[in-house]
Image (cartoon, rainbow, N blue to C red; front, side, top):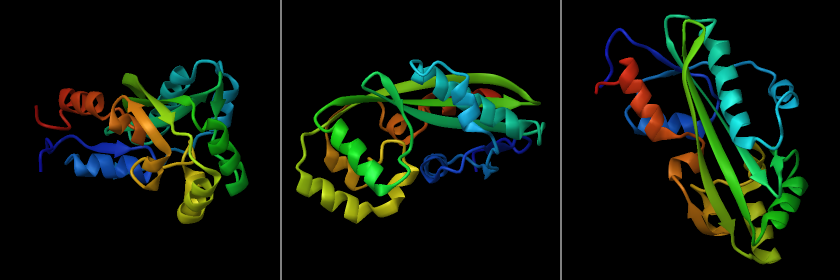
Length: 201
C-alpha cells in the first residue's frame, strides 16, 4: 500500500460515499463513527453561514474520535446545503423529500463539504469547498418515478438525491468539484494526508 507504516487514519464518518471515495483513492483507513450532537452544534451556529457550519461539524467529529485514539490521524467530514437563504437538513420522510425537491426544481442551491484532520485531541487542519448546482425544471411524473426508484435511501442524503445515481437526472448544470458534491473536498484532504505522512508524497 501507499501508507507510511507508522501512521494510521481513522474516518470519523458513517457516510458510505466518503468511505468509497477514500478507498477508491487508495487511502488506507478504518472507521469510527463520531457520536456527536449535531443539532447542538447547529443550534449555536449562524444558520446563514452554511460553509462555516460544515467545517465546524467536521471539526467536532474529528475531535470526538481523536480524544479516544490520540495516536491516530482522524478525518472528520460533513456537508451542508444552502438554499433560498436558509439551511436545508435531511428530509425526515419521503413526502418531505418530495416537497424539497419540488421547491428546488429549476433553481440553484449550494453544497458545502467540510473536512478536518485531528491528532492528539487537536485539529491540525480544516477546510471547505463549495459546489453550485442547478436543478432542471423536471416534471411531476419524473419526480414521482425518481422517488419510487430511490426509495428511503434518499433520507440519508442532505439534498434528497445522490448525484452518483439516478439523481444525476435532476440537474442541468453543476459548477464545482464532483467529490465536493459527494461530500468530501478530496484534493485538499489528500494533500493534508501526504503532509501528515499518512500517504507518500
